Image (cartoon, rainbow, N blue to C red; front, top):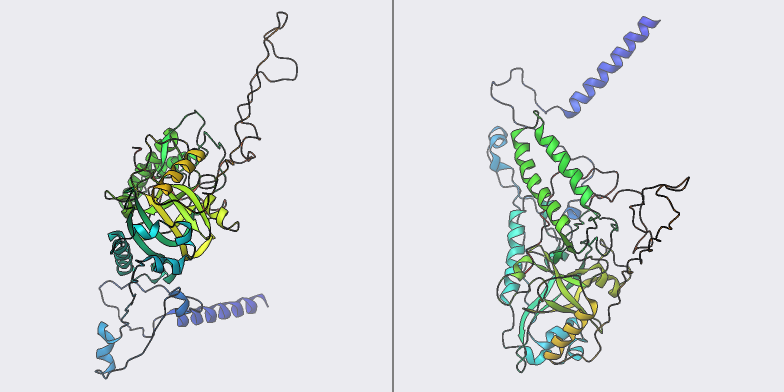
Length: 462
């Protein structure tokens, strides 16, 4: 009986193996193989694939053409016989130029800032607008073979206009952007908040606006970078590491060491507490561009929010503000949930107004400086929004009592002679019991990558 059962199991196993072989094997198997190398089979796409969803908002027109051809044997080996011609058509938008066109998007804008109409020249469109969309088109061309990397329609059309303005009397210049609002939650400053407030998948503890640290408090994200650096160095030292991988590691090691240096020496803005906006890197170039530290106001609905230019973003993206501003506009805003999806946010930047040297943000000073520049372009019909400082001050240290003449240097029974080095849990936020999460990791269960995908180092402080 055992022998018969074993034979039966062997037959079933052989049958299952043949079924799998027929399912995944090529349609034709010849008796002899050519001595040349066998081409790699393309990856198998499993599951149902909705092509329309793959394009993420891009309208798809698909047709099948069947011109007559040669015999099947000939057409089978001709790569041009079975072709998909991929053509992406993206109409370039025209920018708003007049106060009436601006008001179609933001009806309250001419009333809130009545001096804008006098600042509009016959052709006020900045060259940065055309440059922005040229960059977007270039990215489409580079990623056309990777449909998953193409910009969505929403992100392609994220900027309504970019205007160069100058007031005729005060000669105050301004750069006006109309766009949506994404959220920037980056930044860290151990001098003000010594504990990290969590990290999203794309979080970076840096912002382009930075200043030398004022206290010896370590950055809460420094440990995570140190751990990644040690693991990268250990992998680089292995004899089994391939030359290609070592080239990647060398680049990563340089970036990680630069990150450690920046986190050790500098403090940065904090997206959750500081009002700042983000501009594309291309906008920060040129004499009339928006530089880091320049003052700005954000106009949405009937409110004017004072801010500064605090970070530099990708060249193909416009419309981004700190989490502090985003939550003031929409309490439901998060790092992954934008407060405004329509192109109804106006960003007004005053080029060349940055104060040097940089330092911790002074909310009262930001409001006063923005008020001055708004007055120079005709004023606002509403008071500027007032930002309250939501970072509690550090607790006052308890003075150490002077030892009495009869006291001894020995500690009392049951007490420790070593004072606690951990900060008070009442400082800013509760102190977590675990070490700060890696700012590159989307979840605690996922190990952070050794090689950073971007270099978050900020430009030097002016």
